[in-house]
Amino acid sequence: MYTLTIPKRLAEELKGRGIEPESYLIDLISRHLGLDPEITADAHMELAVMFLEEGKGLVDRDPVQASEKLYKATEEAIKALTIHYKLDTVLNKVNERGRWTVTELEKAVEAISERLGEWFRVAWDEANYLHIWGFHEAKLDANAIKVRQSNVEKMVKKAQEIIMSNIH
Image 1 (tube, one colour):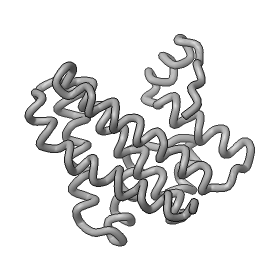
Image 2: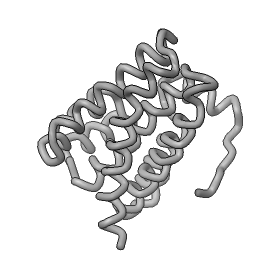
Image 3: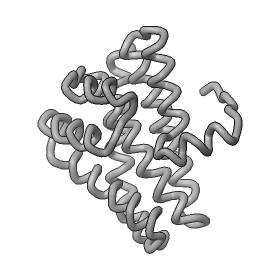
Image 4: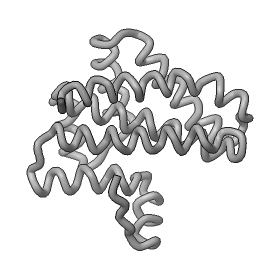
């Protein structure tokens, strides 16, 4: 992974608008340059793996941040699979808005779950629980996060397997 630094004020402005800077830049650059969708899917997958590893490393030290990183890992895995599976109804909405929202993520999860099984939706629900109760409300301890972490990890690993099988 190549690390790019953006000015703090710009990153804060994006986050203040509910936009994850790394993910937003992937989509912006991909659209602007007309990149092959699989390159974009792979970039989102790289972010998913990075967030997963960061989240796992934070569980015992900082449950609030661990919750958010694990949630972000699922978001990025969903984006990667949405692009990979060419879920145009969702992707058109994202392009129309200029960014992803929970509505598009939810629609993507519904479509991906039809392909991969109900477990995928359950993993999304657990990640969303971490996002709300672990991050926003800061009500979950390390144990509550660990209970949900395995489904998040399963989602990211399965998405990675699917995306990587297309590259080789």
